[in-house]
Length: 102
Image (cartoon, rainbow, N blue to C red; front, side, top):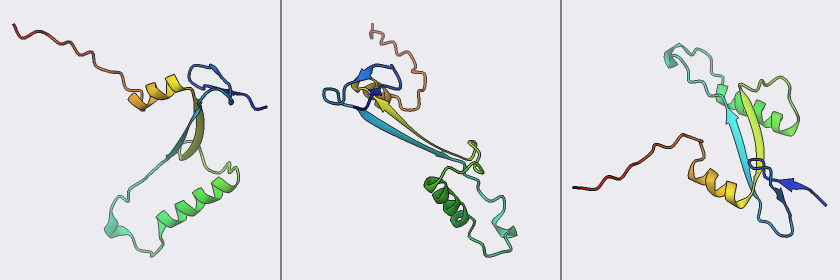
């Protein structure tokens, strides 16, 4: 039997009893050309990068640095899923005070 636990709160999740959410995160560096007029060759650089990333999906490629491409997967329980969906980027929330209109 497989063991699952929430990657956020570390709660053990029973596959038979608990609902489990999987969050997949893919981060890739994107560089815009500095000046389109200076491009002299007909190479499709975006296509070349896409092909490199597809090969990385097929096999672990140490040539791609973590600063360029990362793919991760996280298991979340129901409570942590709800909190994640409310604030997926983990931004600090501003305290909102509701004053009466006296």
